[in-house]
Image 1 (cartoon, rainbow, N blue to C red):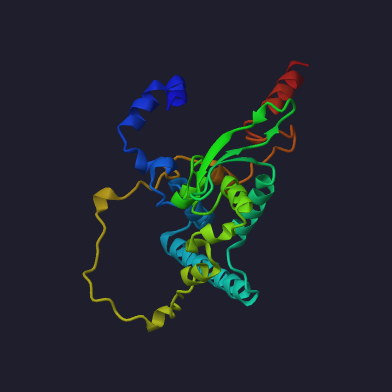
Image 2: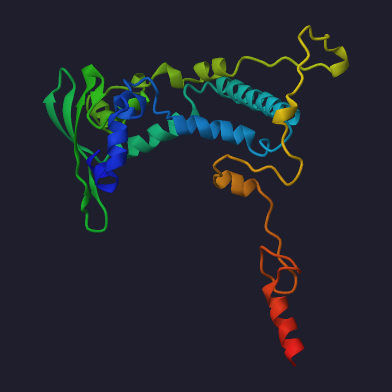
Length: 269
C-alpha cells in the first residue's frame, strides 16, 4: 500500500475505502482459491471473442455452441484422466512438481518438530546471488506458511513441501479436494439441451413488445461504440489496408499525401 501511495496517493485513498477482503487475495480468507475478478473476465472474453459485434441472435447462438463445445471437451478430458487414474488436474500437478524442485534447495531450521514449526531459508540466486535467501515460517499443524500461498491457493508451497520432506510426510495430502480430477469431472458433468428448429417452438404467450420510435437510432453514419477498447478488440478488428502507391497504411488514393506531392511537382514542372 505504501508503494501504491508513492505512485498515486488518490489510488491509495480509493482503496482504503474498499474492504480489503473484496480486492486483496491475502485477506480473502482463502475463499477465492487465488482466482481474481480479472481471471473470470478473461474467461468470458475468451468465449465471446469474435461474437460481440454480431447481431444479438447470432451472438447468443455462437456463445451457446461455444459453451457446448467447451463443456464437451472438458468432460472428455476428465474421462481420459480418470481412466489413467490421475488424481489432480495437470495445472496443479505441474505447479507442485516445480515447487518440489525448489524445495530441494531450501534450508530448514526446526523450532518445534512435534508441531511442525520450521523456519525455511530459500536459496540465493541472481548474477551476484543478491536475490533469495528469504526466511519463511511454516506451521504444519496450523496449516499456515507466512508466504501466504498455502492459505490462498489451498495446495502446499515449496516451503511446506520442504518441511514435509524433512518429516517424511506426503505433501500431497495437503492439497484441497477442489483440485481433484473427480471434482473437475463433476464441474463439467452438466449437459446442455439441444435447441430444436424454430418451427417446433411453442407460440409464446407474452405481450407483443413495440419499440419506442423516439428512441430509434439515426440511420446516418456508423453507430459509435461506448465500450473501452482493449487489446482483444484491436486484434479482432480489420487489419489496416495499405495504399499501393506509397505502401503506407491508414489512407487511400484520395487522401494520399505522397500522390498529392507528386501531382504538385508535376504541375510546377
